[in-house]
Structure formats: structure tokens, C-alpha cells
Length: 184
Image 1 (cartoon, helix red, strand yellow):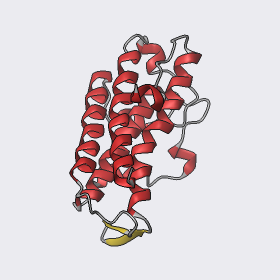
Image 2 (spheres, one colour):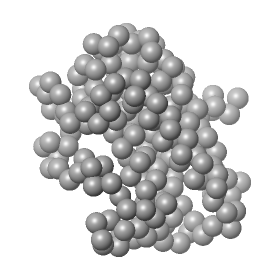
Image 3 (cartoon, helix red, strand yellow):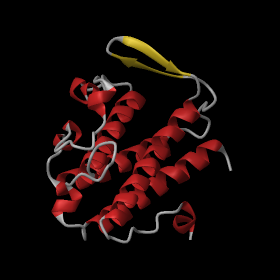
Image 4 (cartoon, one colour):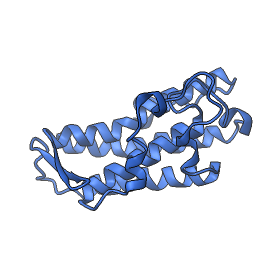
């Protein structure tokens, strides 16, 4: 299997796992879904919003379009504000898309858009070469296009793991999201 084939497979897995997680989260009451779950982005809702914003940011970079300043601003903060503290009643990530249904729709769209982008890459794309994009007028180069794509499709895995831990904490059995189950 080529690296591109593996990335495409993981992008399809990302859509599948996200859909399964969103379906499971429907059983979680609003107070738990929006409540402090000791996650980096405070709540399950904040974490899903972070995923949407990160996907949108990377998609704009892949497509070579100007990055939305509003989205960039989410990362332009010191770590003391970027991540939730134990006593935070809210965190700004939660305000990107305030509604549960809205963030679920947005993450379905963003994961599908990433899949569409990856599926649309030519089979002979140079994944070993650098990836360059513009950020606020300056050119930024990452050393390995394949690694950037792997990061983007794997990013959801990291945060889905955090969310499933929160589900367990709240008494909701998490769905089986292991890659091996996707392959069955």
C-alpha cells in the first residue's frame, strides 16, 4: 500500500469514526455535553469546535486560499488562555458554533471535505516533498507533505480519544472507534 493509499484510508476512517462518535453523543444530556470535562478545550462541545476550526484551517492551506483571520485568531493566544483551566466556566472555543447540532453538522462537513481533498490528489503527488502555504502574507514550509496530511487525518483520533474518556467519566459507554473495527 502506498503512503497516499494509507492517508486516503485514514481519511475515510476519520469520517466513519467521527460519525460514530457523534451518534453516541446524542445520548449525552446537554449539561454533560456542555459541562467541564477536564479536556483541553473544556467541554466535549469545545473540543468538537476545535476540531472543526483546525480542519477548516488546514483545508484553506491545502487549497491555497487565504486563511480566515477569525479562525487564525483562535490560535493567537497564550497557552494560559488557549487551554481550559479547572475552574473555567466557559472557554472561547465553545463559542465558535454555539449549538450542538450546528457543530455536529460542521464537523461532518469538514471531515468530508478533508476526505474529498485527499481522494482528489493525483496518484503521483509528491508526498515526500515540502508543503508550503501562506500565513498572513508570509510563506510557511513544512518539510514533508505526507506528514502534514497524516497529521490532519490523525488529529481527530487524538481528540476523539479525549471525548470518549469524557463519555466514560459521564457514564456513557463510548463507541468502539478502533481502526480495526472500521476495517471489518
